Image (cartoon, rainbow, N blue to C red; front, side, top):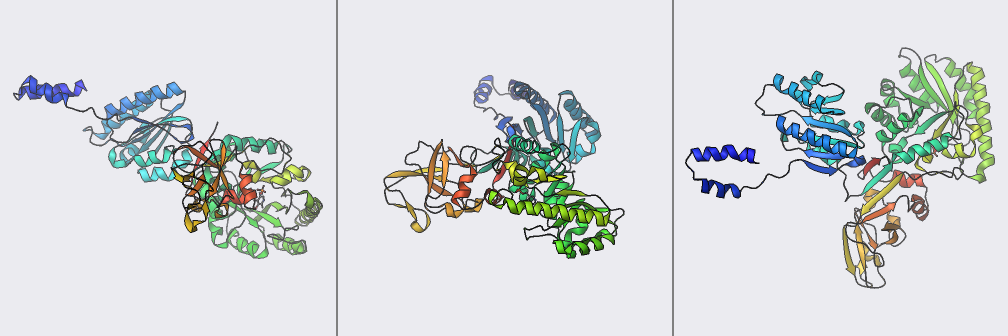
Length: 534
Ligand SMILES: *Cc1c(COP(=O)(O)O)cnc(C)c1O
């Protein structure tokens, strides 16, 4: 501060102000608020926020601070920096200076935003990426997969870097879905233990990866050397490709209008009837080389796929379609997780084998065979053939054969308000609920628009607060619900678990007479997904 005041004092003396006046006025000056703000980020990141201005001196100070904090925590260093405006230096002096600082302060990852940085990108070594605008960076921010890093976010005001901070900041007081990536990988490995070394794994990531997020899950699975991904629709696959997922992807419900884009994005279709076969062939025939397809056989599910009676016709058509490469032939089990259907499951498996044999001979070609979903892997590992299709098991919901599966997804919120309610006063819409004695309720900002099923209203559903179960009282509203806290020690701001490790989602599924799949996939997209590793 003295460094700034001295020239001013000298100037005032020079202009004839008395030292008394100067010292009196100097005493009333307020120190400028600390510009470097530290925040806890998502995924165990540490955020250092300096989104007010950027010049070379303040950059150097911020970099030193970043170095000090990252050393303290033993984590890596990331810098997100905008163009420096109004420094008075010409670009070709300024940016070598900036690049010099970045290179010399041991920065592990550098992200530059602005036309000037983009123009000088070749000055920056190592892991560096550049964007013309903040908006462009925001579009791909998830693909950076920030985790356990100290991140300095420093930008000139015009670049609105507070939008980046908003995205990276851990919001304590919010309804969030936490996804434990280590538990997901643990579960993957539990299933892998049931497989032969050569058996490939296709991970189903349809429906936003069972509600848990597309890119982050796909990226973690790709990193674990999963062989294939499965999505329901072409746009899900295109989203993954645009985010940088490069392993093969099957589209289970390919729509005719997207065939062109599927070829462009390297997405492989499931072919389930003659209409789709002909339509896809007419698009693929113009491609250079063979295009992989996956043939779906209906062995008893009575959903999609060719029937046994259609196989001869299928083979004769495929023979006339040299540009299609039958990469795999597969089928789907209707009741793999349920003992009462085991005889039926074995019949499906044997019919599948028989049909595949027939196709192999008729086409005189080899292809992969696969029929097992999660329940099938656990209960019918003998039928693993060349590949298996793992879905719900990744999230820890098994068929009972694997003991050590871990919970992956936690939905949590917090108590936004606590208030006393007298006995028999009604609570919420339609006056549907009340306490039987004087008590108190907590308001929780999670409602049916977040995916909290309204059938959990009026004490059917419960939530966990400080290790105790609190009943939902009254009707669940669109954006919030009320819980009975009469016998529970709790304060405003306390965390509320809707489901998670200690209050499993299977409880909700049972109360709602449904399956975990439906609960997971009905959590609305407006609930932020937060990924972490332990
Ligand atoms: C969803 C799906 C799977 C995965 O099923 P889980 O029961 O979640 O393991 C496998 N195959 C197909 C065709 C699917 O649609």
